[in-house]
Image (cartoon, rainbow, N blue to C red):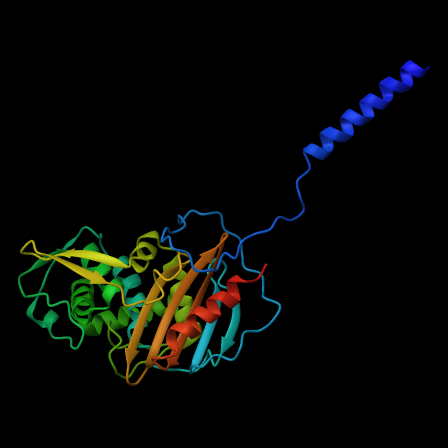
Amino acid sequence: MRFVSLIASLIIGFTTTSCQSNEIPLATPVPDALAPKPQTKRLPYNYPSRPLALPDRAPRLPRCASACVMDALTGKLLYTHNASQKRQVASTQKVLTALVVLDHGSLNDRIVIEPEDTKADPTKLGVRPGESYTKRDLLTALMVRSYNDVAVTLARHTAGSLTRFSYMMNAKARSLGMYNSHFVNPNGLPGDQYSTAIDMARCAYHAYKNPELRHMVDMQHFSFKRSNGRMVSINNTNKLLGKYPWITGMKTGYTNAAGRCLISCGGVNGRHVIVVVLGAKPSQIWAESESLLRWALSAS
């Protein structure tokens, strides 16, 4: 009888020890994923993803004319501030320009510069009539440095004229659910046009789904090869890129009429968010965008 009891005790003890050794802790300490890090490695675009939870507290009131925070995976609105207010959005509308360009032809197509392509001040790459470039290189330069002559070149090549391209932009906008927007040019220079923070977030949501475009807006630097073979180093206008590895794009914009504008996006631990800030002061645009990104990505 004692032998049976001894065997039972050994079996119970072995089972308990085995179960304890295979237990998975309910929670483990996790370092601050949003803290500054020296590395600049980006998460792969097929990184496992999950929708964002809504943070417990609202963010502080943004110091800008309007703002919108959106879940980049589902399109769910997480926060809005005057987000339906119609405003000029400057070069952030080049994201829509890029989506229209990507709908037509191949990125490997070659584009010959026409004389009318060069007339688009003030920010210019300086392409010259007769030069030939791939659509991929021109579109990358547009997304990285926001050249107005490149926007005109791509629009003219895609539609035949800037007027026709604006029709295509507005049709594309409606197809994306941007019902409170109207565009008259591909570069965002002042004109009889407008959009809203919500509409530009919807635009960015669809851009975020395109791997080619996501790669372009995430580039801090781009080496552009001119037709004569000379290489030109182009630096991104988005100052948040490189500051943190979890910020991955998307597009800057500025005119006197629009103020400072920025569409930004980022991801942490499989959660992805889009932030649109419109009409901010030069000294505030980066901090306001970063603050809203951190707020959205801090949710568990």
